[in-house]
Amino acid sequence: MTTPVQQVIEFLRSEFGTRLNTNAGVRQQHGRGEAFAQGFPPDAVVWPQNTAEVSTIVRKCYELRVPVIAYGAGTERRSACSA
Image (tube, rainbow, N blue to C red; front, side, top):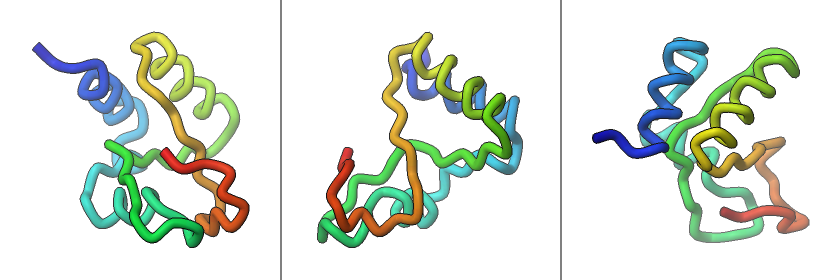
């Protein structure tokens, strides 16, 4: 049986192809900003190209109760979010 996270990743891979990445290096890069020494890498990184794609991602994550963390420039200097 697959976990909800695995189900979301499989769905996103089918929707976004190579714009979904689960490689450790990419996940580490997106798992921390400059505000914290230790990072917490996400399970996957997706590069949506428009708001409809963002909606698709968020809708599926909501449906399976998988958290979503938005990533901006990666500085996190204001410590707005650390997951």
